[in-house]
Image 1: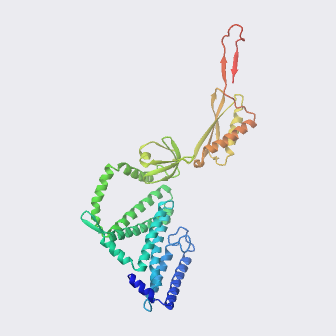
Image 2: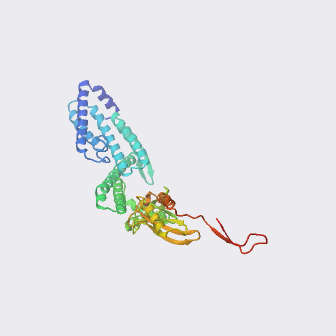
Image 3: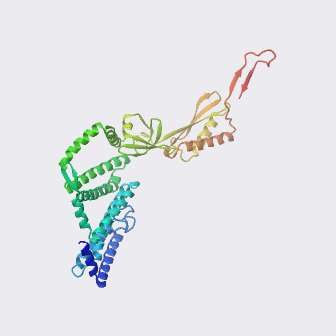
Length: 427
């Protein structure tokens, strides 16, 4: 249908025929809504088929498209069709937009680039729908087919490029959808270890994206045998210019497979200590207790020394030191220290807090309190501060002296007329 046909159909529509089409359209939309409402009652809010509500998912525009097209085919035998013909490209564009939007939000929920892609796809889909409705899409496609670009000895039209991009986009979205479904429905239940689930989901997603890309290239007429040359060139590039990048990717899969470090472990890399929050294919994110986050290349975790503070035991030891006077009761001081630690709910009861007399310091008896926590990611300094405050209150309440630093000066001789020789203690 060209633009003149559209104008001719618009002039031929009467009120009775328009009413029949509107009734048919409303019936198709209502039927699609009822089906989605019935089957989407117990579906999760992140469902690609149903979305957060009936109209947010992919199933509603697909059903509306099918029912509307069937109604158009029935009504076209009796009268001139306009409204239903307009509704078909509208629902088709809406289905394409929902496919891209729902899949991208499910796979990349925190990406800011997703919103830009959604807006771009929405504009292109609605522009194509408008051109289709008014009958200008065939002339536009013909013009695009006449514009060709040269790639060596091969000439490719803009229409072929746009069709290839659209086909590749749809196939890649379906591949991402399948990988996301496998991760949520199969890997989440079958693989309990978070690191193994991560490597499995990455491997499945990479494989499906590769297969989808090959299918998309084949669908637009690209000779896949030519990719062998590209693969060889890519291998040479990885061997020389991208060897560090390739090493990081390989190291990421090795870390996930060996599970030498896992998500949630507390590690120390060089002088940076924190908790592993995520393991990407190229780098690992380590978050310190003060909120600072380090991006460590995976190759560094393989080739350098890394202290895993929770590899064999999830318990984390924290210590604090206090000095009291020499006249203090050792058993009483130990009891006060242990009780101060036990009063904190984050301190583990097994193993229980323990206090040791570690040293005879110049200023008094030096005690060290050892206690363990299972959640170091919630902070260590805040817990140590609370325990130190409790210790200070306990020692003051018991009348135990916390001495100031002292130094003893011995005077061997004095000039004539000075005070007698003796010992002077200076604080």
